[in-house]
Length: 517
Image (cartoon, rainbow, N blue to C red):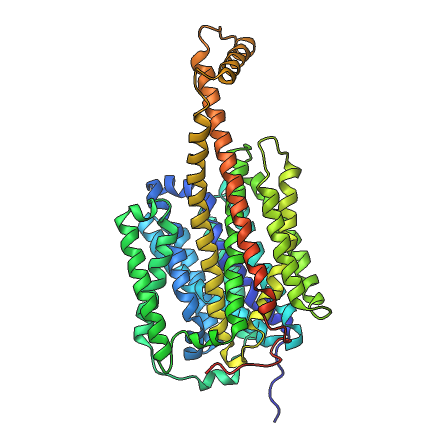
């Protein structure tokens, strides 16, 4: 009696990418609704940010252990339970009547969603044949790149037209459909039944403490002035100690919760470094650009979304094209080109000024979208290309954790640099606002004349208002120069991986699995 035919690969791809897309969307969809949540639940500004932090922390903890969990209870069952918990938690978040309830349910939502990214990554690579792994990573990359861009746009529209609770309720029908599709189209590969059953309790505890504290440091550090805060210092020490012990424990354990031996493959290790640096730079710019156009150019949140959107569409169009090109040329050439284009886009952003029109700001985002499509597909495919199928779940979990941590580090460090460079430029520009400067006196008289002509305020009464306007302009100029500095610095995180590209093996995906034991 023959075995049942394998489900259609496209149905499998749709099944795993729908919930993954929604899970990544939920990382950013809440951002623009925080003010509404704060007012509705009578919370303080610092308190309401825990709605974001709680989700990110629980999500980051689950991602690296997802491969182990799938091997313990079965991939199909784990996917079913993850989507179910995510869907139920989404309903609970929407129905929450206090901030404490919302934060608690966001923790459960992050736990449910944490396994979806690495699971979908591993399932796509196993469902598509080796020669189509570039196509599989293009599908995965579309969700990874587009979801965080659409999140703020969708969240803003829903909040303005309905209520903030619907940013969670919309997950429910999608989750129900995903549950049924999972039961119909997802099957467990035979080798998962051969996994060990010994539980790595020490590894679990150290992972929870290490990753949890690290995510808290990254998410709260800039707000609490980093190591000037005793809380951040203590969390950083605790995270570093736990992670060092975690690595030591996992390398000695017979059945580790995260098998770090996968890093014995140099291509996998280098690919992780490149993905970390690439998403460090990409996510930092993804956060900084909307702040720039809203704070300095006066854009609404919706128009800020329109600045980001075309770049996401460019990535969607380029990724399938990159997947096809990988069969016709050395994938490392595409990767090098993608990194160079991304670096060029950030160089263009570093030249922004306060006179820039919409097209001038949109163009670098389009360039970045093209570069991101050429970067993500080859680096993701080459990184896991030599990993054996039975190790794919663990490798995907580690790979996705590194990618997410890259984004978290990028946002945390670049926003901190933005604040510091803004202070630097403010101090430098203020040195020239002195009564002893002829240029300052000339500008002040010009401003007083403008107020007299357009506002009807006499020269003798307009000096205070003129000084206020000039000080406001000084702040804008200092902030603009700080953005230019940060975009220029961010560019180097795409330049650094250029030196690693040709150290990667160009072996066809799964053309030669290496021994990782």
